[in-house]
Image: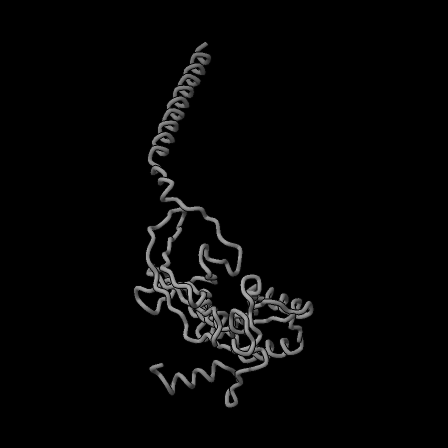
Length: 278
């Protein structure tokens, strides 16, 4: 009998303890929920949609945007958007920054058109906006930028020779802008891309403009110089400058070959010792 009373007492204490625990858990959960901040109004929210186009046209303009990078070299002019703009179409542009679903206020931009357009109606343009960012850690010594592939170019042997020579010279990454190439070359470049040596950037410039296959507008016509070559080379500089110590601009049929050194790094080490202030 005494054991039965003792057991009932223990069960009663267990029930009371469980009830108190559940009550405290409910209060804690309720208070935690109340601590969340109220959502921002619709005018301060932005969607997280990102354009999947390599060359998204800028609405209500004759301009094409290419990419945006943080430029840490000039204080106060940090965000640089590379684009292709119509020469005779000038209008003020503003930037809105979307971060974690929150939309910033509109800020004015500075538009810098490059001088080299070779007479074509479209020109490489930088849109600069003040927005502080963080520097990217450099992880490459050398990056090579190869200008546009177009016309179903398919010289596999030439590409393989050039890429392997650059690998021997100490190049870490080769960036290639591809409008069109042949099927065999595409398979080769995909193989290099999978191992991380080549970075392929789609460049469908022909969908938006009539690219010229020549250097001068007076001789070749078209909207933009040589499939937008000046834009791709500028884009590659900003794509690579924060992650690579040196950036080389080259064509696939040209190789920067040191003749007194076994690789590019030893050449640059010597040049840096000769010119320590550069």
